[in-house]
Image (cartoon, rainbow, N blue to C red; front, side):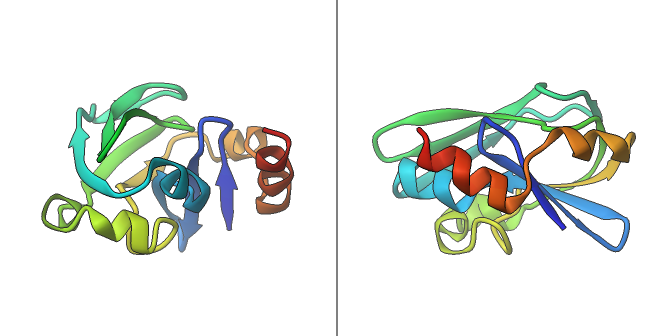
Length: 121
């Protein structure tokens, strides 16, 4: 299952573990990603800034879409930030987390709702 925030982060849940990253749409809008700066807290609430993502011509902040406990950073992104461009919603994940309140996923958009949302932008 994958859900999206209005700030273009996603939460992908697989086997009781969640991954947070930026949407494929967001990476395409940013362009060539050159650096990800993590400023992660062990526990985060929705809308907590956890870093920034830098592309050739812009920098965008990253926000947690849910309350979570951070389990792991995707260290591969430090060496290969282009992974976010290549597979944003897969191998380009940024954080591996434990959801504190899974019901918060109901506040996020489904893939279909998100696609409709970005068409209206």
